[in-house]
Length: 203
Image 1: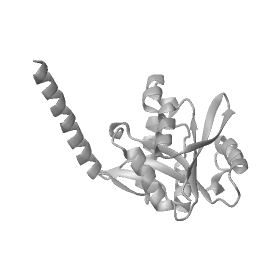
Image 2 (image 1 turned 60 degrees about the horizontal axis):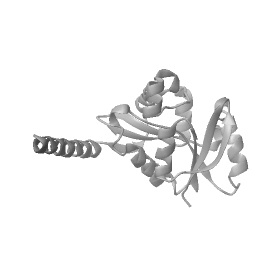
Image 3 (image 1 turned 180 degrees about the horizontal axis):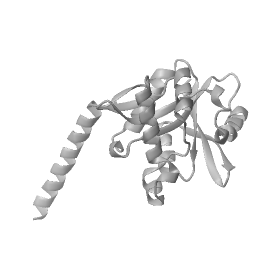
């Protein structure tokens, strides 16, 4: 009976790996280019906002904090298109691209930009990763890392580094960013939350 159980587990694992491989083959990484894709980013964002999920989900799955309007998302995309992952013509992951010129568009980001101005040398040409999110059904497939690698392939010829910030309580996201190659430049407190300003050096 024990041997049969082990064989069953082995078969299940191999089947899962095969399904994951097939799923990844059907995922395309590209830049956002139309209103439908931007609206699907908004939908995915709403599904994972800190205020819209349980405390258990936050700890297990991670969360996003900022809520963008469609208009702002579109303005950001016009300046430098967002990076997205799609399957079956649906956005299942995104990494927002924010140029420093958008620093005054969201009041909640002002402390981060103030810190960045003091941390990053003026000669460095940087871009901000405004938010990253992968649909729950597609987590654990390596999409998080692949969308960041796509981000780098697309933008490293224009920028020296990528900067973002992650709340210390969002441990899943913090560890995932470290695994990609981000390091913490500084931590600071804002409204009882400790934030990590993180940088991924490209040049």
